[in-house]
Length: 408
Image 1: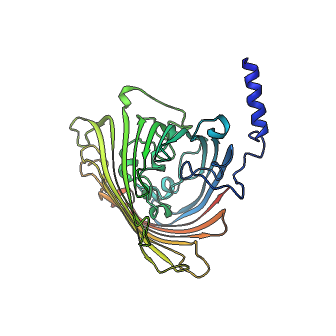
Image 2: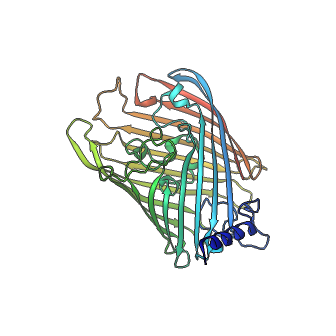
Image 3: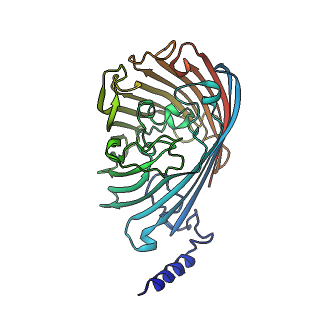
């Protein structure tokens, strides 16, 4: 068969199944059982040839007192993704392709008004159109094993705490020991890599991922298309195990994780003692439901995370996050979530260049996520930031705002 004939055949198939028109739907048939290839896949990807995903987050945030100065900003983040079910489209069993793009935009409250270390908003990023994900994933052994390869961000699968995911401050996402010490593939930067996931049973999960080395900061790698494989940039490796309790009985569920990471490139000694070959960190995460009286009753959960890194080469050598969430607190609002969380980020004692160092930053956050409908949420938020930037000379800041999240 000639190349032109093959191309015509592919185009006819694409037109037939609606890849070029609106039948690339995000819904699925009434009698189809939803199939999950990965946790945040577009709705209907398991049942259709293609599926798309749209998400827009917008927020108004203001620094009411303290920090560098008072003021307010608007910022947003648009995310559009497309998934292709390669089992249906090309006959590749248990295989999918997924790609998405980001467009963060707006001012940064942290940079303009607060000056904090952990960043007030987890959508705060340099304004540019970015390729964020572009990977192929195949599952094996009755979905107990999956292999993913392509452009990815590590914080979409590693470091994740369900309770911490409610909050706006970036310190509840990727650990500060990762975000501050490494140029890692975390939002809004991604990198070429390979991820292997093994799930031997319903309770136990193991993950390991290897990424190319330093791909540059978000201002240098503005579109996430700068992929540098120079030996001097090394590689970054991540491992994590997770264990769920009360999976098959009526006990209060929980999940506990242990993990670690290693970056193989060289790091300067913070006290001027030369160069270190590699940097590393270890961490632990726990999410535990502690109260649920039955159908319609509120559910209370707690979470805790901590991470450690070596002092001699890490700006942040210790951080911990903890908090509690309550779902369905008010009658008729079963999906709403109220949360209180705290972040403590410790700066290594080695650097002495900053004026009036406090050696730590603490964040207290209260947030309430209200579900308007199945596509829209609204979330008022309040943060108190003590020693912004880990500097005692910077006044404690009070930040308030409102976020909305629209998804299709």
